[in-house]
Image 1: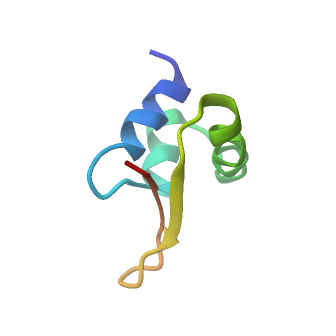
Image 2 (image 1 turned 90 degrees about the vertical axis):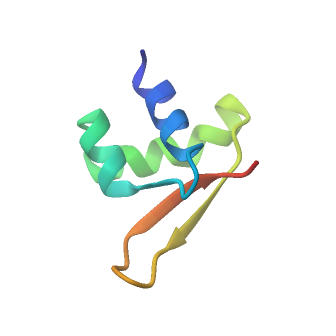
Length: 65
């Protein structure tokens, strides 16, 4: 139910989730999303990758399995 749980489930999907999708789901601004992601591994133990998609230059976060 929490925003953190929502973000974690989004990045655990195959292909991960874009910054824009996380912003839409949580109603957070970009800097809030980036700050949350910066502390995610330390706070929850969920490791993830952050890449820039070539096709549209979107930032994509994906949990490491």
